[in-house]
Image (cartoon, rainbow, N blue to C red; front, side):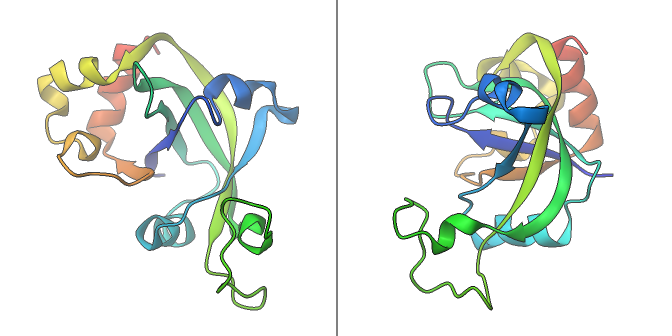
Length: 154
């Protein structure tokens, strides 16, 4: 099993939005980065767990845990001209972009802020804390997963 960190802007789609969805499940669509697409396609599996990270907001951080419940499949938004994620060059017979379905798994008792992550020496080499990292999904090492779960109260 792999662990992940999935970023979303809370004013677009938050952890609370996910909990309000039917079956607390939602497609993770709109990914337009080949490296992330390849991770979803080649590495993500049903049952993998991920942190739901609120980004581009006043207090960025991790709200809780999600589970991957459907493996990568074509992202329908790439074919919709009215979608901000429309990709004119993508063809239905050869889709460029994929998505996975995520399901709410657990709330953190404590919202784990980016400042808290930065202040923890055991997380210093975590990918999200490296300068220049802009990926919307990153893999999380088990040692980091365990420490962040403790910070969050799980």
